[in-house]
Figure 1: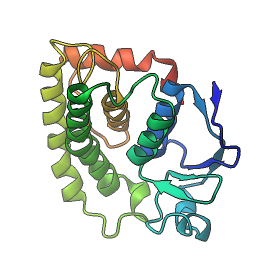
Figure 2: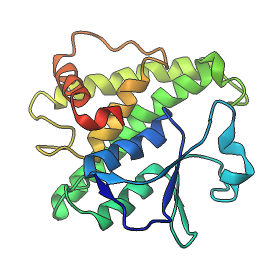
Figure 3: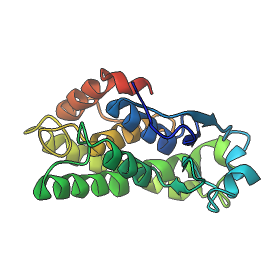
Length: 211
């Protein structure tokens, strides 16, 4: 692992929540080690003054640099580290590949991770204190949206190894996080989607999966 060269840099982390984990997987793929500050999201630690003073939206993760500047939003944090440590290139190399990965990253985020998240937040009993109001009908309405995109990905993955082409990228990280979150969101992925299953199984064998 590469120790990040700013000794005062630290990452306020939210455990198994999708976005904090997305950054940890990205850092693991890069071989970068950043000190973590655990925040208990189950106890609403992300709404504490400690987090609100660094991110007024009260969301995790939050990266605090040595000079006190902060970054939130998982992809923004990933882009910061991509610039510092461009190898391996998880956002692509060259104009076309970078644009293609950005295209797929947005598709996966908005059409897969977002509906899965909405299903979880509006259906799971543990989220009643988080999502106000919690609307179960909206959660249920997002399940078929996620499944429709999974079926779409299954067709796309018939002709390539990864989400955005021949190279593992941030789009694969986001899609893997979304796929993992289907279970707590109570979304059952069909067993007959062979190409999606092959891709997902491959993601789970990567060392970064346990980050």
